[in-house]
Image (cartoon, rainbow, N blue to C red):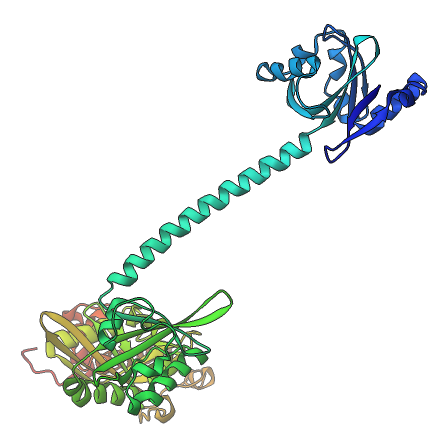
Length: 471
């Protein structure tokens, strides 16, 4: 009589029963335990008569409690049919069946193979499947996570495709290395005069849709974007002669570099004769130029202003408040705004500029306001004057050190020394305030913290401001 025993890969091997019978019972038991995690002897009534455990972690699960109890009572209710079939010998010989035992610590999955023995008993050998079950759970969670990510990516791609195809602006994606078109939206196909069908533009060289006379300009613009940040659009003609403003942004995908190119058509007559030269002139000005809105938020600036405040790109300062860089806090910008509101222009206003590191430099500001279509814009021309400033010459004898003040002791009373010094300092402060405010006495009184009446009184006393008797 032969017995079928399943090996690790679930194939069956035929072993003569006489070979097992010749072994001592303890030797046979150790052999079975070594080949599996748990071995049990089941009588013909399905009662567990003996248990051998080869894994210490299983012994801690309380498996010894199955002894002298029906084997079917140790498993979950939905697995009892499997126990019945294994005890009855139903099914393919040598087939392993997995059941889940119900323990206080939770479910315990074990895979069993039953082998008929003498006297109607049956040997059940089992393998602990907790590690495999945990691996299956991790695999299932990973698969579910991948499915969620895949769904999210499909949704993002659908939204991107909808936005890309419906955008009125012509957008072309170009490989930064080969300069060949990989994708273009319908607006770009219409502008380039190419049919909207798929594959009609993909793979073509981007220079093919540019006019032959402007291809070098387009190639240079794309090269500048690939080498560094370049925000200024280039003026090019398409192959059909239409003028477009070309701007590009580089991005990386799948370890490759691509260029996202935007083409905006314009009228060459208006742009080429007025706006473009004006932009170029402002950009090349040696003096800093800043355009702001009514709230002093920066809308545009030239390279000289970026050099003055130590910023690398115009986008870094666009939208920032101009007072963050220009003027003494709470004084100069308020005076500039009031002057612009009252007169529309400001000339040679002396103030300071702070750069990104907090350093200050003396500058001179001229400004103008415009109101077009109800929108107020302020333009500022800023000139650095720190290098040509000279120390003011004052013929009045001002004490410059403590020693000079102490030399007056004994010749002039202390009260006169203090009064003379106070009057001189007061006069200098009033003159400085009038200089800062361009002789605007109301603003001067405000920055000095005086009332107008008090300021006029001090002006009379010091003989300043060319006041008449009615003032």
